[in-house]
Length: 187
Image (cartoon, rainbow, N blue to C red; front, side, top):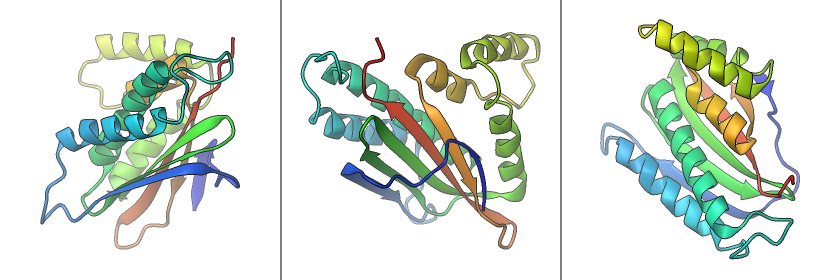
């Protein structure tokens, strides 16, 4: 298994959530599922947070908005880079982060494309990379390498990402994307 970024299995976690989206030939995965799941996960984890920020933890509204955005982006990317099969989401609290973890399968070409995109996101300042990517995309609208969603999550929400790429089996590889969303105030 090849890993990139901030990928690791947490030792201690609480408030666990898991969702599986099954066989797309029986029930096709739809974009609406991303948004619906994001709202459910955000509401579930927000219930463990104070109404207002207590100076340490984020307030409930801020956490809800952040979780909703990040989960929606994770599921949309897992679907976009996936090749069907089961798509899964796991979420768990650690001491200072909410780990949002997407699982999917991808063809070898989609895996290579995703590795290329995310490798370019791990070096440098996310805000500078975001501006560069926006300018690049404006000048090259047909370019297929974006990463804007990942960069937005990194620069606007402080998300740290990790990826694990499984070995290819019959031209299909498992992909895990971890988004570590800080839940404690930094100011």
